[in-house]
Length: 228
Image (cartoon, rainbow, N blue to C red; front, top):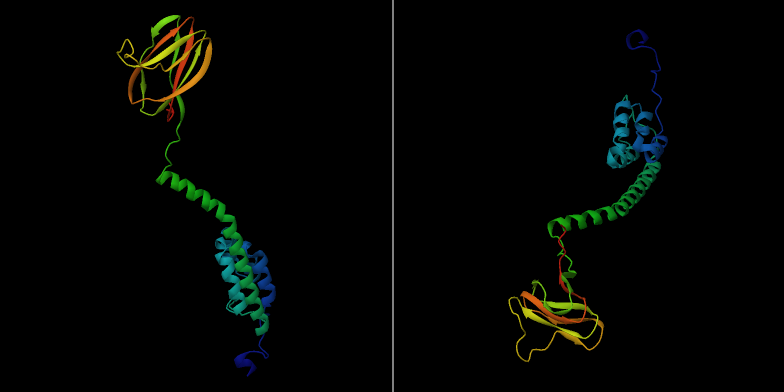
């Protein structure tokens, strides 16, 4: 018998305890330590290089070890009782669920920011309007007509500074004098500074200004600033 089948008893390989391997998988699984512990060095290195397969390999190995499917490099199973394996599987579920929740919470701000950037590309918000200066004049003493300026058909603000009594009329471009009984855009009986608003139809205009000294007038309307 001994000559035919070899000496008895047949040497039995020393089996690893699954609990040690499961703890290594749970704590250091992304580094592949559990697979190195089982003698599976190639897959252990791959697991380490991929940081546990981005967490998927790490989670799968925990359940594989707890269920008894994980074996060592020689194909030997690991020792452990059924209650211990059930407990390990339950703890694996808790760990994986916690890791998934933490990853989702961490990724939420990034996903929100990415969504906002994508929305801005797909449907950019309308440009913001602001009050722009569309014309600015220094008016010499006497009665003079300013150069032409264009209005966009919305309300305009006329800011003025006169050194003494004076007035200003808003005229369509090419008009030299105001119509009969026309009201001035503004007038004052002494030096004055102020702002007057008026709805100005779209078109080209000039200002007829009377001032005893050099005055200043600027015209402002809502619009989008040219980035250039």
